[in-house]
Length: 88
Image 1 (spheres, rainbow, N blue to C red):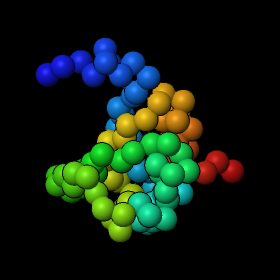
Image 2: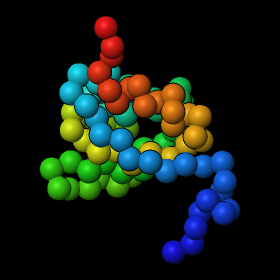
Image 3: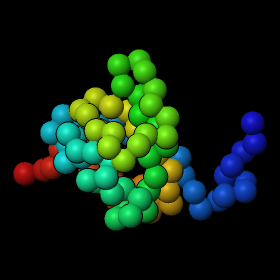
Image 4: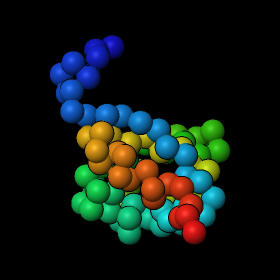
């Protein structure tokens, strides 16, 4: 495996679990517009021991899903709020 960080130093790959009550839960990828609005791409979802790679726009994001995301560190930091319940 090559170390992508050497070739793409401004790109981060991370995993985030969709927490109960998260704003993103129950919505499709097309509704959330991760790439268009947030500059982050969802590469894959892990759900119930199954992996959905390259999910389609109509894929629904559910509580408990583990998402594999790619984007700049800044965009990843900003999008984290969608995966946790809103405070307050």
